[in-house]
Image (cartoon, rainbow, N blue to C red; front, side, top):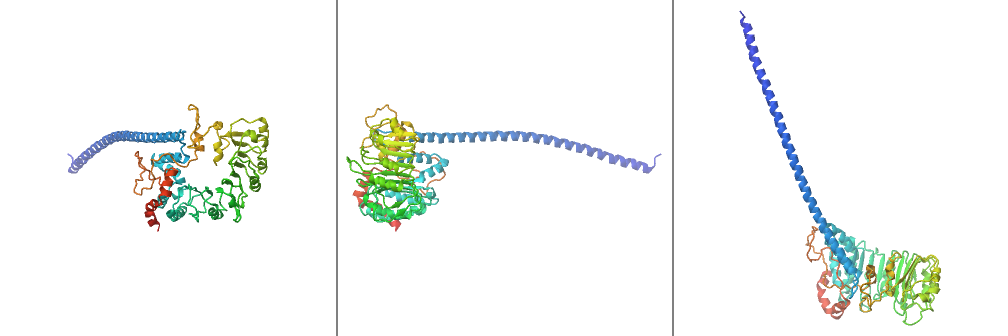
Length: 510
């Protein structure tokens, strides 16, 4: 018979064994549930990822479609702008559109395309500013004074308006302000259509950053002289009109860096420059005056080239009347031993036997009629590569035609004196687009519908595209020119009306 202690040991062992077995089964069941839950979670995760990927793909597709639609819109507007540009370049039977007007419309079209193109268009728009009315001067100065004004973008300023009596002080003040707000301004032109005698006693003091300077025949030399002295060390290009009386009475001016000089001598004035020293001069445009019907003596021109023609590589020489048989221009060529490109005026049968030069490789002749060159003529120019006979209209232009222009330059066209349109020309004959850009010398625009463009300080700067006809807030300096007769009616005849219009501006400036 087992003892009591043995029974107790058996009972304790049995009791302790049963919970261990139960615990093991419970643990296994829990682990199985975990595995099942992990599998379910993984399946749900895969479904979620697939859903996310599908959503992302749909969003990418929507973004891609939106981007494609935006690009198509920009391309369509750029194509429209290009079509408008080429349409402006087309020759009109009524009047030739000015190059300035065509360029302004093209730049405005780029500004209005989108936010990205707006920034590109702004740089193009403000790098060259043309002011055709004195009211535009005030608008342009306000644009420069605004927050983040475009002063750093301005490279060229051209002033071509008439200054009334009562606006002279305002003009000087605001012009000086432009030079202060435009630190990168290097090109300045002052070409008023007409002036009242002795109106401007002192021209505005220009910035020392100016390297290109141009004045027309309405600005007298004694007014320009202080500016020439101020810029003599930095000036690289100068365009000016002179008379025979300007050669004396002024001290010597040394232009250390002047490389290009355009001089137009007024009618019946000899080609005599003031006492200038130009050791770096490389290009010279010389428009000399004289009486029509007379045979010209080029002695003054020869003396001029003897003093400054040693380093010339380009010479543009025109007279008020064509060169005659009695004229000798071989002496002019002898004064320019380094000359490479020559543009002259005259009939080929008159100048043909007389010219010779060893280095000239490009020769342009503006003459009636257009005719071919002979072997004897080419023999005088052993280095000649390009010979062009040009329409006589080119002799009144200061445009330097590069030697690599297309050969259709030889096409002859007669222009009406009244409006510059072509006359007696076959309607089916092809027209070259470049001839419009070169022959259009009228600074006025034929479009009178466009308004002045002024900065709108409250305008939306989000860069969104506006298809309406409202003006761009980026184009404060760009305005459409007015016909010259309108300028006379507004400023010259009715000066009191101008004073009333400018009264708020005078109050502001004071």
